[in-house]
Length: 151
Image 1: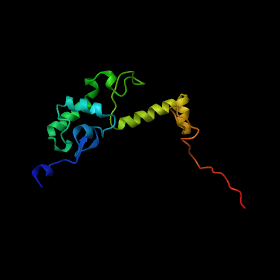
Image 2 (image 1 turned 90 degrees about the horizontal axis):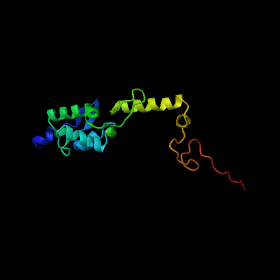
Image 3 (image 1 turned 90 degrees about the vertical axis):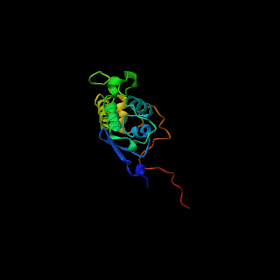
Image 4 (image 1 turned 45 degrees about the horizontal axis):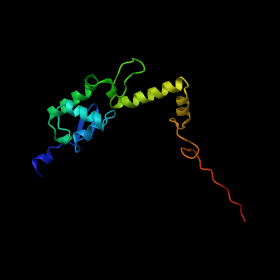
């Protein structure tokens, strides 16, 4: 084995999440909730890091620049690039990352249930929320078959 193969970090810690060090920076950053391919590309560009380099082979200074770019993402991009352009409580634009994504989603669904909106009621009853047809798909519970006559 060469020296380069031994010094690869298999896990890189960014924003309380372990990212895969065996993948390129662009793909590895998408392992963080709230970051897609376009956002990862912008972060790699802001951090001045090669987006095709393996995440585990980056030096510590590059990883620190990526961490800073991730934490300062919402200040450096326009509001249309954020995943929450208008927050329900504050009204300001935010970009939510990591565990905050799931907490915010649960909070939004609870608000819909609390105000008894149509979408909230559909969430409560476990039915389709976004207008899909439910006659033949999305069925839950026990299957009901046809009984055959005994001879």
